Every structure is written in structure tokens, then in C-alpha cells.
Length: 114
Length: 109
Picture 1 (spheres, chains in turn purple, brown):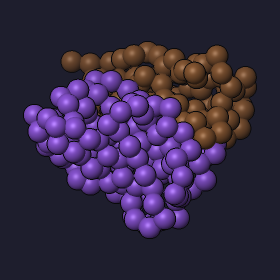
Picture 2 (tube, helix red, strand yellow):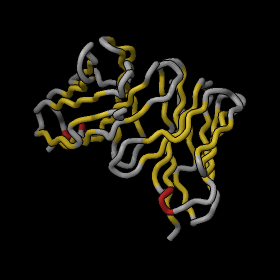
Picture 3 (cartoon, chains in turn yellow, blue):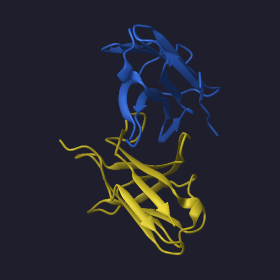
């Protein structure tokens, strides 16, 4: 049973470009969380999704950031018109049920904006 | 919003020592999770706790779900060099998964 797969592991974008980060949850998991981590800091919640639904996006910046989890395929975190401050590690975690259960993390995507 | 206060922020370990860290909150959580993160990697789930008062072990790790449901601790017994890393607690309340700020475990020089 493969773990949570994130790709790419490293992504370099120039200011103003778009970044697309992908997360394939563990088999049988239909709940996905996205977190952002700055160097030497903790995990900051961004968004929680179930298949085809955004359940909680209270941690997402209002502009430039969006997330989806389609019926088929991976969850995507999209950052439009990236700025240097978007440079961070982005982690997704998947969960079998979402409510009050364990969540398993991928290895993250390290985004560098130059 | 819900917040988890994790302490200590950092600690030095000497091989063979037992160490302890904890998380507290003013909010009630239904599940407590403990993760370890190493440089360049994602957090790895160590222990999951589902009931108030529950005490669970995973090798040299032991964690407890506080009886008030507002706290949890993690103990590492007989620490070894590969225990270094950042340990995070996390609590769930419904759909919300909230993380503490982490405890950085370092080796004594």
C-alpha cells in the first residue's frame, strides 16, 4: 500500500509564474489536508478537502491560492502569480475518514520562488 | 481558533536518557496524534490516541491522552542519536487537525 505521494519534490518558479503541487492520497483515503511550513517553523493549516468538495479553506490566502480534489486524480494546490514569500515546503496529508482519525503525510513539495 | 501549546520548544538529549514533551490546550480534542519530522522529510505518524486516559506505546515511545482531553505527553525512553528531529503533537476536533509548534530534539555535544 503506497503512502501519500507528492510531486514534484522540488519546484522552482520565477516571480509571476504559476505553481501546481500534486498530492495523491493513500489508497482508500478520500480526505486530504494541505499544510505549509516555513524553515524552522511549524505546520500551518491551509485547506481540507474531500473528494470534489472543499470542506474548510480557512487557512488559505484569499488571493492567488486555490485547491481542488477531483473525483479522479490527485489533489492539486495551485498558486498563481507566485511571489518570493510563497517559498516554503507544502505538505499534504490524507485520512481515511477525516473526522477524528489519523492522517498520513507525504514528503512535501519544496517551492522556491526566484 | 484552537491552539496547541507544545513544550519544551527544544531539548538536548544524551544517549540513554529518558525525555518527555507535552502539549496543552484550552480546547478539548477527540484524538491526539504524535509525529516526528526529520530534515527534508514529511512528518511521520508515531502514535495515535483515541480515548481520554489512553496510554499507548510504540517501541521506546509512550504517549498518553490526558483525562481532561486537553493535553497529551510523549516520552522517549533510553534515547539514541537517531531520536533527533522535530516532534509535533496534533489534535483533532471533527474535521480540524491542529498542530503544536514542535519540540526540536538535539544531541548534547
